[in-house]
Length: 190
Image (cartoon, rainbow, N blue to C red; front, side, top):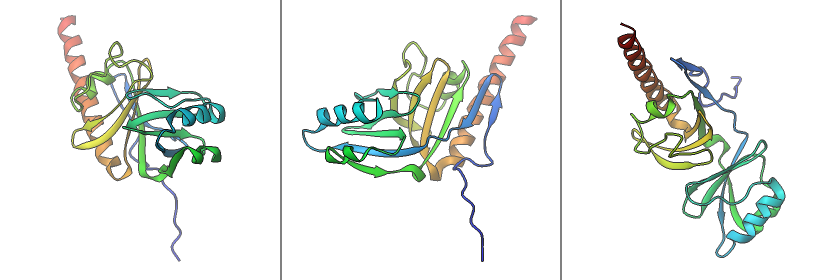
């Protein structure tokens, strides 16, 4: 009988490095989609704060903590990332476990936004896209969620089936920016 072994979406693909940038897989914990029932957004916000210490995010925002994150993903939809949802949340929202559906990577380094500028139609520079900002957008032809988790850290979530393409596209952009920065530095040294 065949023995099955669980693998992460980016197993064997990451980490990757280019210049001062690093792309690595993140183990997010549980990923649960939440959609509040009609008129339940306020009650859901209160229940989330009581149970997990994070509230319901406004469009384009994320609430980040050490133990749980709430990331806006669309109209009346967000994802709880980290813990299993408290059972009390089911009274205000539809809960759907999506843990196995997503590949989650983090791009670190000050040139990360410059690399992603080659792939996404969103300005990800820190003074425009501050910590806690999130966007649902396209990266090439893939639908992704991008969240700034730190001054030089961008978390990218894509469907698990696109993990190989995600790593390939982002790493190529990283290498291109790193090479360009190396050429620019070489030109100024001469």
